Every structure is written in C-alpha cells, then in structure tokens.
Amino acid sequence: MEVKDTMLNKLLPAVERAGVRMKEFYERRDTQVSFKGEIDLVTQYDLELERMLTESLGSVFPDFRIIGEESSPPDIGKQPGKVIYIDPIDGTTSFVHRFPFAGISVGVYIDNEPRCAVVCSPMLGELYHAIKGEGAYMNGKKINVSKTDKAIRSLFSTGFSYDRGERQKQAAIFARILDISQGMRRTGSAALDLCYVARGTFDFYYEGSLKPWDMAAGILIVQEAGGKVTDLRGCPHNLGSGLILASNGLVHDEYISEITAAEL
Ligand code: IPD
Ligand code: CA
Ligand code: CA
Image 1 (cartoon, protein in one colour):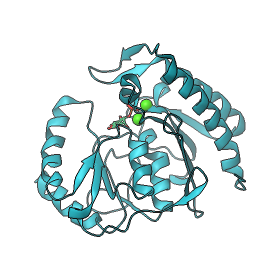
Image 2 (cartoon, rainbow, N blue to C red):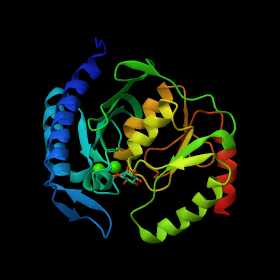
Image 3 (spheres, helix red, strand yellow):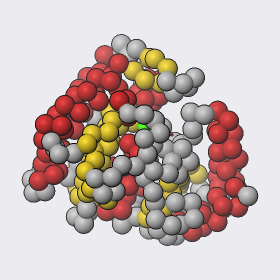
Image 4 (cartoon, rainbow, N blue to C red):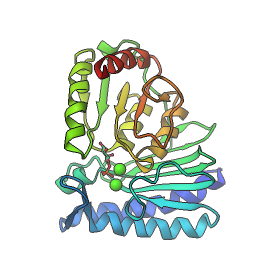
C-alpha cells in the first residue's frame, strides 16, 4: 500500500515490526504472567513490545512525548502538547488465554486532538489506520460504520473493569442494554472494539473505566469511518475520562437513554 502521510509513514513500519514480534510471542506459548491487580495481568511481552515501540517511535518522533501503558502511572489522564499513546498489548487477558483478539494500539495526538492512529492485530491479520481528515482503513481498504438505525437490530460490545466492585455496577447497566439490542460480543480489547465499530461489525460500543492508551487510536479510527464518539451525555469525548460511547451515529441516542436510565 502506498502511504503519503508523513506521520503515518513513520508510524506504520514501527507498529508493523512490533506486530511481527507480537505474533511470534503469541505462538511461543511461554508467556509469563505477573499481576498489576488481582485480575489485571501483565506479561513479559507487554514490557518487551512497549520497549520496542518506545525506542522505534522515539527515534522517528523526537519531539513527541511517548506515554506507554507499562511505563506510565495508571492515572496519568490526557496530556497536552505532542503525545503518542501506546498500548503494547491491548487485550492482555485474551493474549494470555490464547483468544486472538488482542492488538497493538498507537495514537498520535497534538494538543488533545487525534492526528494519526494505528491498531494492529497480527493474530487476526488485521491492520487498521486512520489519518485526521483522510478516512479509516483496514488492511489498506477504506472502512465505514454500519447503517443500522435501531438498537434492536444492532450488535454492541463492551468491556468490564478490573475493579470487581465496579464490575457489579457495570453488569447492571449491561443487563439493561442487552435487552434493547440484538446481541453483544466481547473482544477483550477496547482498541479492537472501536475498530469493529469503524468497520461496521459492531453498531455500538461503550465502556466505563478505560485509560487514554486503550482508546487513543480507536477514537480516530471510528471518527474517520463516519462514526460518533462521545461521553455518556452525548457531549464531546474527553480522553482523560474513562468513559466512552462509540457508534455508527444512528443508534447513539437510543443507547444513551438506556444507559442514562440504568445509571439512575
Ligand atoms: C483492557 C482491554 C479491555 C478493557 C479493559 C482494558 P489491557 O486493556 O482494552 O477490553 O475492557 O478495560 O483495560 O489491560 O488488556 O491493555
Ligand atoms: Ca488496554
Ligand atoms: Ca495493555
């Protein structure tokens, strides 16, 4: 694929190289798991891929600050200026259990605006990218959100917090919105959930306790595919808040009413 955007030209080769390594790691079956929390996992490969990406992106984006999940405080929030958010393995739990929905997520931001994004899942053979104002692509082909306009005809996705108390609250909201939809699928990777909204597979996705590196890339990919990304009230999304709603735009309000009602 011919790539004209300079930023993407620097980003893509670095992520693709890391993607090749990720697939090798996945196939080795020697993953060592440590625990950041009771059910929050980290492996030697999260650390290795983050080191690799930080090094390669640092050399081609010298004036950007690189914020990687495994070397940043969990509450870092959104950051001003020129920033690259890296999630070296989004979907570590899937990776550890050998469920192939895991990927590398890298989003380039300037003054809190997304400029360029890449999500790569080598186990699935899927590479997504978006450039601000230039559309969203999967494996070089343009992608668009779905045209489903009723929640009852829609497929949604969500994720659950690593905080078990928080999960109980999320389960109550989940039960309610499951009822207004055709069904749900859970990938275990927020970055891929967003890409699946962008490619029109999922019509809606929401989640309540994300970090900037989980969603920085996926947000631009959804927006550039013609989708909508907001907070719980339908207002502009804030990368520093953990909550995100993303959809094809057509079922957005119907889901918002249900989620808001469930929260009361
Ligand atoms: C997680 C995944 C998951 C989401 C969690 C995230 P990690 O990221 O994106 O889908 O439900 O909230 O923390 O820990 O695998 O990088
Ligand atoms: Ca993540
Ligand atoms: Ca991760």
